[in-house]
Length: 86
Image (cartoon, rainbow, N blue to C red; front, top):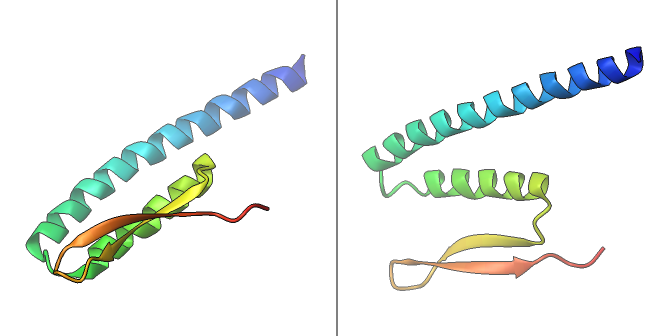
């Protein structure tokens, strides 16, 4: 019985931590958006978001990578690159 209780407590603690991190992430995104709005031509902000997206996709087990790349006319286009089979 002790092992089950320890497991349940550990699960609850980890779940609370994940929920807190998701809340922190939303706060971080809001601040990041404000900084990007103040400097809209800075490509670093787009790079940050692409990096965050790739890390989240890795955690969630997504099977492809989505990138924004210049379209040659001053805009951007979204491109999906499938991951190779393992």
